[in-house]
Length: 415
Image (cartoon, rainbow, N blue to C red):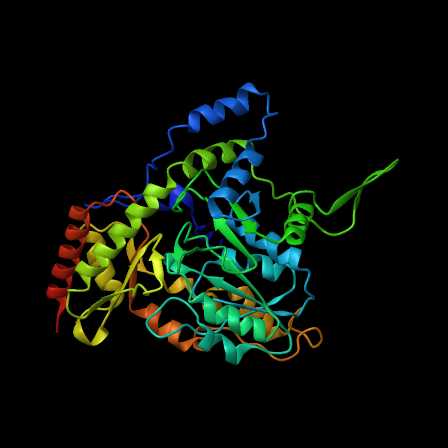
């Protein structure tokens, strides 16, 4: 009998084995009013509008008209994919270095994800890498702000306008990050967020979509919360489209509301510490922290990342990362699995076999996925080490300790 594959873990379970000399996200610091809001849910007999309260509070904090709460970040982006109402076989340009949750909704709606390459030395795509991928079937650009580094959005939006394309954001790792004075998630038509336990504004789970577009907001609620149903007098619910029941639970909304009340200082602390940590580790020869662009006013960092020069060390990047973990940096490791065209075997198989929607029609051409389709991103990830245990608990002494550990491991492995 074949061995059962190990299932992926998320939230606290994904970090349960992480030990070291630096702070870890768990146990999470929870806003002081969480128990009060949870008690309100119980005392009201489940009649309190905790979801609405959170939606209004997050919309106000984001400076937008609408917030639509969801059970998680994957449902948030899935509802957006459904709400746009494109046709099967239409193409969405999406960052190649991301998480499966970014593209799950696209695939379920029959859209075809197309992955522009990243800019050299970064985790993000850019207008320059996006433009060659635009075709007559392109409908939207989905920008992912990986690690909290916001894509250079102004040139992307300008490019999209020239081709009549929608731009929207996966801001799951960039909550309350700022680009030229503007918040992540407000730089396109809509933005999706994550409040999963391990994320910056971690709740038990959760997510949301924000937008200023009234029509889109109503469609998101209709498809994502009302399951695409309208009331027919004398009959009842008629499902005019295939919708979802992606409603945030009241108890999740209560915790999210409490977390929203403390997130500003937590993000400010992350911003201060990621910049200090980057400066310190940048002093280690042959080690390069992920560049922080000048346009980033606030780096709401979810993880720290750095690249090593493979020619400078006698060990592989994987061995380097393992030694960092052994020396006290919890969660240090590679992130090659973030390369979606390589990590999603089902996409590779469907495209190779020309299964729907990769048949002609609706697809307009042949597609192929794999690491070689994004060579810049592929090569970058092979020497990129990150630790997702970076959090607001860091203080300057932790940054100094982390830099010292990186320096020691680097010196021990130099050629």
